[in-house]
Image (spheres, rainbow, N blue to C red):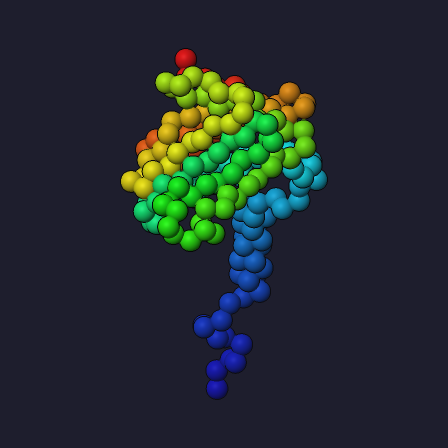
Amino acid sequence: MGNRFQNPGGFTLIELVAVISIIGMMLFFAIPRLDNTGEPEGDLKTASRWILLNVQALKSRSVTEHKSFALHAGFDDNAFSIVDLSPPEQTAAAHSPKEYRLPAGVVLTDVEYPKKGTVSIQGTDIYFYKKGYSDKAIIHLKDEEGGIHSIVIEPFLPSARLYDEYVAFN
């Protein structure tokens, strides 16, 4: 009768500990940090993320729904709103703008266009067309601590780019 402790199909304790250790180290470095203790809620980064996500969503949504949309930047109320530009005979709910007010301490300074120049009073619209392109524009945000973000919207790229400085077309 053979030795019952010699089973070629199992793993040793050392092998199991090594594999679990490697998986633990991979999780430690791979999982992003979830605590936001250093960043207050509603700051410049949060506002910039909202714009970045909605620019990308508007570009894809305009193609899939075959509709044109506008991202309205309001300087008077320091807010952005998404407006459906489809014909009025469609549902009225489609025309009610979805508004996002910038957090306290964050200011929409201006929106720059290559041909129209810089707009910094009242409001302006950035259009997203049903064929998948948009207006070329740069949105400038500023916080009370002096931080500046520039969000560059390119007509044919699916997403916008974020810069931690004032970026202009010239």
